[in-house]
Length: 104
Figure 1 (cartoon, rainbow, N blue to C red):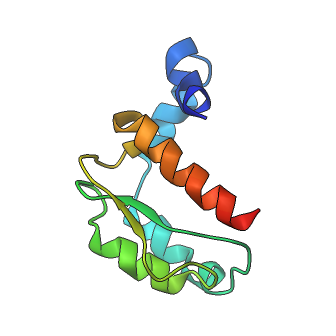
Figure 2 (figure 1 turned 45 degrees about the vertical axis):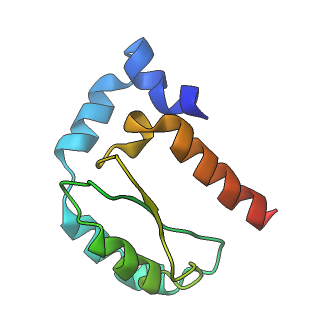
Figure 3 (figure 1 turned 120 degrees about the vertical axis):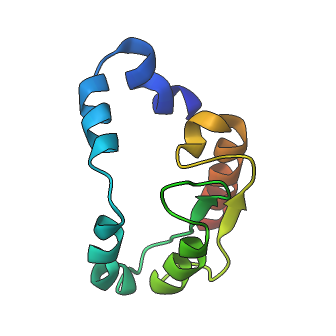
């Protein structure tokens, strides 16, 4: 899983697309998704970094309450920012794996 997250950065393949994605980020996209998220019925869980400088951790609880099928208690990942997959890859992979095991 960790290798997949870093593939574009390690190989340069798709790096331009990844950079465009990063530059285009806006909280607006999260807010625009709210109607769809409220009706989401598939397994979901919110993971959020405690040191995210773009979207504050308070949004984690808000998002968890918004997603129809998510647990109301998001997983907060300490010592990481917006790109927690790159900052704490092993911890992030552990938490995602834990969630995947709950959905069978």
